[in-house]
Amino acid sequence: MTSIVLHSIGRIASAEGTRWMIPLHGIGGRGDLPVPLWLASYSAAAAVAVSFFALAAFWARPRFEYAGGRPLEVLTRWVDARVVRWALKVLGLVALALLLATAWFGSASPASNPAPTWLYVWIWVGIIPVSILFGPVWRLANPLRTLAALVPRRTRRRLPDRIAYWPAVAGLAAFLWLELVCPNGSEPLVVALFVTAYAVVNVATGIVYGPRWFAIGDSFEVYAEVLARLSPIGRGPDGRLVLRNPLAGLATMPQEPGLVGLLCLLLGSTAFDGLSRWSVWTSATGQLGSAQHIVVSTLGLIVVVAIVTGLFVGAARATGAARVRPGAVGNAGLPGAFVHSLVPIAIGYAVAHYFSFAVFQGQDGVLLATDPFGRGWDLLGIGPAEINYGLLGTGVIAGVQIGAIVLGHVLGVVSAHDRATGLFRRRQLRRAQYPMLAAMVAFTAGGIALVSAS
Image (cartoon, rainbow, N blue to C red; front, top):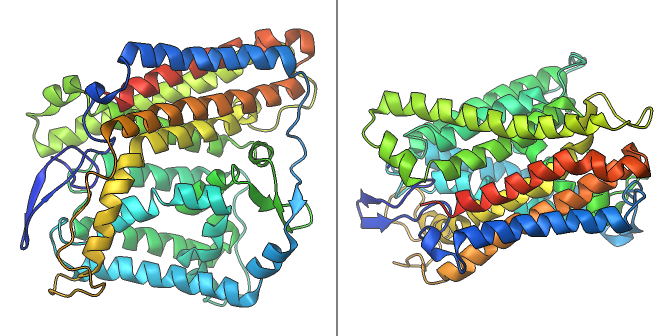
């Protein structure tokens, strides 16, 4: 067992007894699906294909080019109030301080220390619903941005023009490696070292380059901002908060090569996470030593990410066989033009993989918070409470997994088609999208197979 927070069922002894952990993707495997795996995969892929042909028949012009919406005057005044801004900053600083304090000075056992659960569940998974529901709120509460702003500096260095979002991609790759490959990724000391190093690097760089750094270099902020593009709450052209069509907000995402790398990394890492649960993989790697496991898993992660990247980039570029309208494609080419369509797919994969994990393991974050330093405290007054594993049935989990993947891909098809209507002439529109449709169908069927792997 490589991690109590992120991988298969295991038991870890603690001073209080034994704590049972759950698998990342839900309870059980293929047997939990309400329908046979092959039928679920074929049906989901068919739903994506039918959506595409329906769009091709009835959707001939871009509809998401205008990112405005209904102004939310009261909410804008409340969110932009100085007291609210400072409250969010203080909340972010307190959360970071608690995470570091428990990681460094709490119990050495992952089963008794809340820091791993807070990082991998409350923060990493929690970013998804918070960003989708409330928009780019992470930027306002980001403690690293706040710490960097506290250091006065008269001049800032200019970021290189071609740096794009690649620093955020590098930081995200390091975090995902810790999450999915490192055998000790859930150890409190490892969490403490990673969070401390990540904070020091980003705060120091933010001091040198200014606030702009966090918009392109802080992996968690960049990830949250990407997710927030799909939020119904966003900023209008005048800076006021508006209630908008989420897909219209998604269409405003920058077309940068770094974002293509970021989204492909997210999809590929989730795919590898599912692959690593297959019995074929576990049988082949189960007898490896720690160093061998790290090497094999690292190579596996790289290969899967490369395959996902190749499928998407190849499909996007293949659409160029049709003639693109002059000036319609940005610096990132056709992959950049369609990268926003990967956001709902990435969210669908994340929900499918983390839903049951968040519901069950998230409870443990509360249970452990009552005694964060293993001193026998009961700060929250919850006593010897336990995780309620009966909260969700396996049928509900499987239904959410399949539904999230299908909905994410359908929204991805809609977003890609809307962008294509602005790139290609109508007589070329359907033919130009066939490569992207093939990639979407492959992602859909593969995603369902992976989350239900056994």
